[in-house]
Length: 179
Image 1 (spheres, helix red, strand yellow):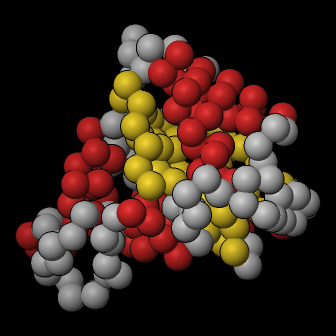
Image 2: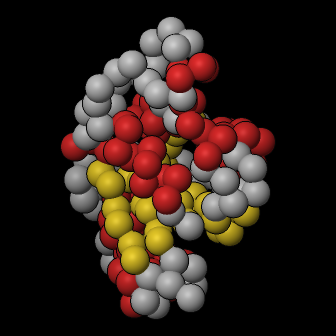
């Protein structure tokens, strides 16, 4: 059965390490017949949450930016990939801002399969657990019916594109292919 796959790449660098892994995930998902789309968040206008609380009753954000369209796609997807470079052992600002901005309709992001792709210069998987716990705080703890399907740890990569030509690219492709 074909699934709708949404890959959210929060790398600030097009062709950065986590972004390249997203591309491979998408290729793998498409090779298996899934409808896969990658959104490169750095090209989108996503403002910070203002904490105004209007969305608590209206379920709509007062801000007019690209987040409404992205949130619709999240709600309408079967599979969501959260991909981020790791900065100081947490997701980068683009990813955290996206997560914060799901508040108006986050309860509609139900029964989804989630994959996480993280990249870091650090080589310790244990040091990446704060990032994974941040993702789980959003997905497992707040979104009904979440199924965590896989984590790709792209460790030991610092410079843009360094992940290219490594086994991580094949892992990302296979993870997408096995959605």
